[in-house]
Length: 406
Ligand code: NIG
Ligand code: FE
Image 1: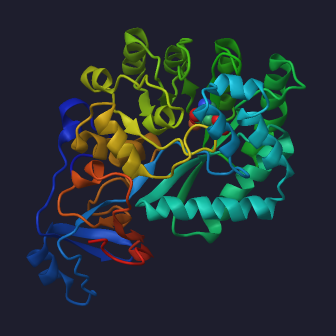
Image 2 (image 1 turned 60 degrees about the vertical axis):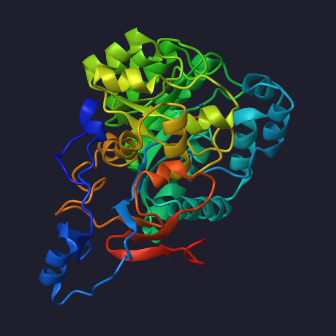
C-alpha cells in the first residue's frame, strides 16, 4: 500500500496501491524502496534477498483500541450470556468489569506482566505490529499506575510489538464511591501522577449509563486535555447518550464504539475531524445485533478505523483478521476499505501516520506476510490463522510454525 500521508476518507478508503510481483528494500529497519521485484533485486546488491513466494505482504495491522493488561478471564460471564443473561445483568450480579478489576488489583506486577506478554504474542501471531493499550482495570491510583508500568515495561523488553499507552481511570465507578467523588479522584490524584511519570499519551472514558454520564465524562476529558493528554472515548456503545457529540465538542482524536450513534453524532464527528474507531468484535462477542453504521460514516467522509477492543468481557480476541471479516459481513465495508481502516487510518488515529500503517519509503519496516495470493482472502477466510511471518523494524519476529495448512 502506498499513497498520500494522512487518513483516507470516502472513495479513497478503497484505493490500496497494490503492486503485483512487488518487492521492498529494507535498510536498517526502514523501508528504502518499494516497487516491482526485478527493480528491487537490482537495487538490493549488498542486501539479503528473501523470497516471499508470491504471498500477500502488507503493513502490520495497527490495533487502535485494546485493553491489553488484565488478570484472568471472564469465562463465567461468557457462559451466563450463553444462557441468556445480558452484559448489564451480569455486571450487576457481580461479574463484568468489576470482577476483572478485583483480580487485576490482586495480581502482583510481574504476574500481570506475564499475562500481558501472552496477550501480546496473540497480537503478533495475527499480523499486528502496533497496539494502543489502555489501563482501566485498576481504578485506584496505585493499580492504574501498575497497569501503565506493565505497558511501559513491555515496550522496553518486547521490541516485537509497539505500544501506545492510554489512561482509562474512568472505566467504571468502584462500588464504594459516589460517581462524582470517583471522578474527583481520577482528576486530582490519578492524572497528575500518570502525566508526571509520562505513562500515557491518551486519556479515555467509558461514557455510558451506569458508568460515567456526559457531565462526568466531560470533566475527565477536559482535565486530561489540560494535563497534556490527547483524547479517545468509549461512547454510544449500549445507549445513545450523545457521546459522539461530546467527543466532537472536546476535540478528541477518536470516538470509539458508536453502535448507537445517529446522524447528528456522525455530523458532529465530521465537523470536528474526529476519527471513528469501530469495534465489531465486541458486538459479536456480546452476541448483540446492532453494529455501527459504517457505510454512512464512510459516505459522510469520516476516516474510519477498525480495532479489536481486545478485553476479557466483550471482545476476547486479538485478531484483526477476525475484525476484517466482521467488517465485511456486518458493517458492509469492502475488503479494501476494511484493510485501510485497520492500517493507515488506524496509524493516523494514534498520531503515527508518518511512521507506520503503509509500506512506503521512509516508514518503519513493520509488515506481515500472509498465506494467500489476494488481499481479499484476509477478510474472506475466517477462524483459521493466515499469518506466515511478521517483521518489525525489518526483523522477523514471528513465523508460523507449521507453514501452510494446505
Ligand atoms: O470496550 N466498554 C467498556 N469496556 C470494554 C468492556 C470491558 C469489560 O467488559 O471488561 C469494551 O467493550
Ligand atoms: Fe474498549
